[in-house]
Length: 147
Image (cartoon, rainbow, N blue to C red; front, side):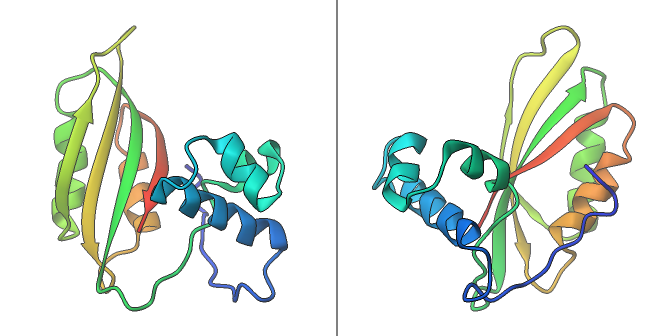
């Protein structure tokens, strides 16, 4: 996670066409209208490499929502207390943890997926990720989805 990451809100009418198509493909997959990434990218007419290049960076904006749900994927050292430290960050930003999925650690590395609900007037996701990235033993944080 780059601590200098920032977000822009851009009208889709001036955004590069590939960004709009990546969002369309992600919507097709989320709605179950396409079962595979290949099927979705063929339907919106973009390359597989373009989809993977932008899929974690392009999201639709819905200004009517008062809260957002997002899912983060973590790669952590298998050391007691790291998950607790991450949950303290969430609690400090008044979020509600919806799900936690922790896989069995392999080679002293644990993979964890956490879904959270947060008010749109609260802290932004980027600030949360930056704070968690500073926790000792956190190797990687990836934003998997945001609604």
